[in-house]
Image (cartoon, rainbow, N blue to C red; front, side):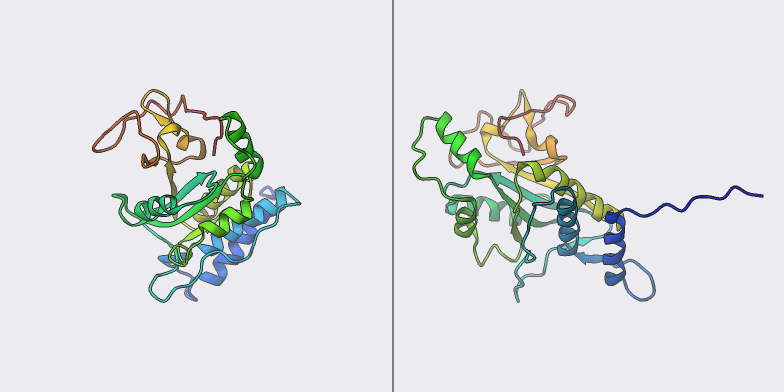
Length: 244
């Protein structure tokens, strides 16, 4: 007699992915070649709610637009999401232009959406205090998001509602959920030149990103290259004071 195998109970994550997948796939059982990104974001948010009981997130992700296709994962290629973290106190036109330039004019293939990650209020205050700057005008995170939002950005840009303690879980689960359905997902990091150097590397490795866009509009970079910068080995990652 063969040994009886115990039936493993699927995790909450796998249940959610299976449920989403059953609603997305065609009736013949074949996996679709293109699937909207929004359901996968909701799966990752559900993981946060399970790990952090006090975490809340809005149901709305991307705004539909007649002239812009909803962000979607495509099978058989690397799908990339831009991650843009910062204090944004306040957000200004330079932030929006850098984000739009990275979205539409970068040399990378498969960039499908952007996630902006405003830092929490206490981190903004700490940075200003350390720099000896005036802390009397600190916009709340909600106000900074409202000022950053734009009708031209909303169809492909979403603002992450969590804090530093939520980021690792969310972005790991988002990649896992996509991989579960056979989609390859990677992150493109936007950062300033103070977060990257040819000697220390870049904090993009901390969240698994491999591509980095450095904007030097507000402060000069210590390097200038034509076709990219060769960083040291990821085994010795750069750890900034305010990591992603």
